[in-house]
Amino acid sequence: MGGLLDVSLFTIGLTNGGSAGLIYGYLFVWIGTIAVFTTMAEMASMAPTSGGQYHWVSMLAPPSCRVFLSYITSWLVICGWQAILSGSGYLGGNQVVALIALNNPDYVPQLWHGTLLFWGFILVAVFINTVTSRALPKIEVAILVLHVVGFFAFMISIVHLAPEKASSHDVFTQFSNGGGWSSQGLSFFVGLIGSVFAMFGCDSAVHVGFLLNIQIFMTENSPQMAEETRNAEVVVPWCMVSATLLNGAIGWAMVIAVLFVTVDITAALESPTGSLGFPIIDITYTALGSKAGTSVLIGILLFMTAAGAISAMATSSRLIWALARDRGLPGWRLVTKLEPKTAIPTLAIIITSLVAILIGLINIGSATAFNAVISLSVSSLYAS
Image 1: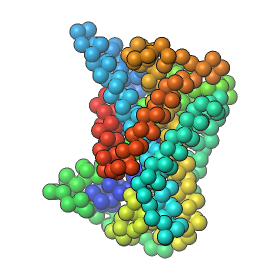
Image 2: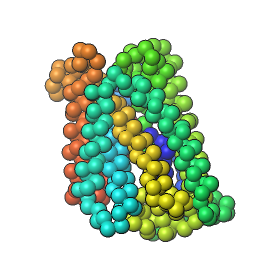
Image 3: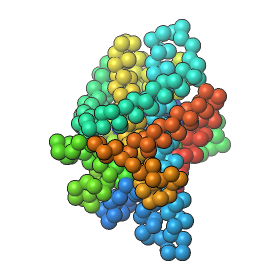
Image 4: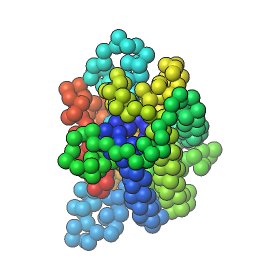
């Protein structure tokens, strides 16, 4: 994920850490992520396979526990990517709810509103990954272009039009412990959660040649498995490292730019959109002074969130397919079947989308419970 989506995850960092905590915390997470994915890229250069982590464990673990550790790792990876897919849908759905609240002050948000929109994002991802799968590489090129163009459009607009700006002293030295933790240090580390989630996803290239098709989209008709990509031992690790560097740089620049136009952090967090978890909408509206302009810029973030859901579904479904191919799932004979014309694992896509939809039901009862499930699942990805 990363890049423009980082500003959608401001709430935790602003509350726990403040502006300075968010800046240095993001940098801390970025450096750690580079270290993690550089190591993974080295393993991908050795064995580029859609199984990724669990395949490498099978190769490197002692023979006595190889099967057990590989199987546990496979489920950790799948749960982690399932959480990324569900988190993308949740993030997009509730951003739409917050944007409606900005444009319609009389609107009263309900938890089920966000869940319905969550499902909408999941269904869009299903549609792109199945019906328009042949155009997927070209869609990814368009997403990459919009990502870069949207970065400049968003950053230049808010920085240039903001009537007031925070001082460098406030931005780079002001810490906060809004969560009421026992120490500022603990608050800082709690605030890292948003940055950690924003940095997920760069191992997508290991599991499916989704990003790789940007390089070869003129000759390929559908997303490939990583092992089917030409010169995979070079292309796969190159995509992983370059995506981590590019998204991290764009995200850090966006974080700093947005914090400079956030004069009153408390007011942003307590605004109608801030109370829904998206102070970035109030910050953007304060900078632009226009609801229409704010809707356009937040629309770019929504588009990138949808793009993240599309990528997460492609990756999650390929992981399910890979584990079934290795006979690690019940009914593996059915799950491994591919569409004859497009080579798309349709049943794996259906499985991952149904799981995401069922997870979304938790949000109707309790957003806190939903976030707890997502947090545990996300932790499993790094545990892998």
